[in-house]
Length: 481
Image 1: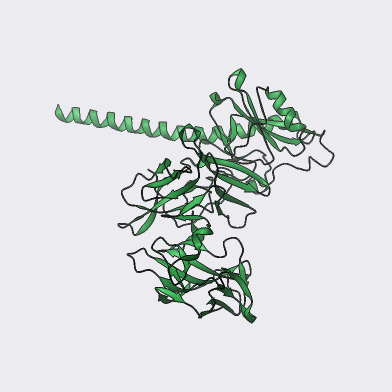
Image 2: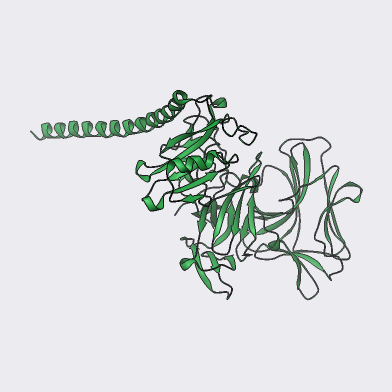
């Protein structure tokens, strides 16, 4: 069982600095309540013609969060609360409606598209049943679109589902139909739906996707999609939907029969599943009454180097959990430099492949070709101007596989017996045979130094222990004499 906390900060990435930790305390930092101006005007529900205004500061203040809790259920702590929030983001103020479980944000109206305001942020439930967020001059930035559907009130259910219901308590709109990065207990997700998580200051994002024969977690970079974890039902049975229960994440078929489950392994019931916005790890979380906080009972990835971006692009996560750059002259010694690109600009013949033995990528793509040689794999990448790297598995002769990538990332050191090698496309001439050899040698030296240092510490500690033990035995024998 793996447990992790949800708050803290992360490291900087330099040579020999640790890569992104497996379970960073900041894993869900986007979901935690920051120091904020909070106001409580809580009700059990909200009726028609409701209007609430939250003031927006005149001057931008980085880190500012203003929040008013307008609804909560009366269950035991940690309970669900609904808040109207104003947050300082990228030089502007974002207005959103949020749902919290204790101190963890589990739903946000602005998850995919932020609504920026000035002067004021308004929450309104109109007389004809439309729930809206508005700014100055009655500008509407978000709405449920439920006008004229008989809506009578807004409620927060015991599951954390925020709903608009009519006089017969029939649901006309619900937050469960608009998943973000968290899946709550009792929530169901059908095939072709997904959770998404957006790292801060990044153009890439993570997604948990429910597919016909598996659930998988992806790293999405522009139009590129690479999976790095998956879970399938036995016998490759098809999935219709998934549901988070008290004891695990359950997979169901079209007959609503459970066909597989990812178990929790803890006594306390699960409260939510979350896709971390920093590491991209998937976790099942329960509430620990003794510690008064949420902890992970399951994590999809249990090894730091299996994280999709444990190191930056063109960096290798080593056995010592250190990030080593492929290039010695990486900008700032943090692998930002990479290699020149533009292979599709008419310079396709001026490139070669730099081979990194005993290195692989955790990012998965469909095999480009099977039963091929390493030389043929290299040529496949060289002939494809979009290809930036290739992975080759030299298993049995009839199972040699070639994978092509348009991105250089997710690299990690693997055992020499694995038969894996990774090849990076580089410009020909600027990185000739001599320099190419130096790059490989440099990477291996870095890895060897770190691993050797750790082994030396272990052996030194063992030797010190044996000497002390022998000395103690001699003293004991002398005393007996």
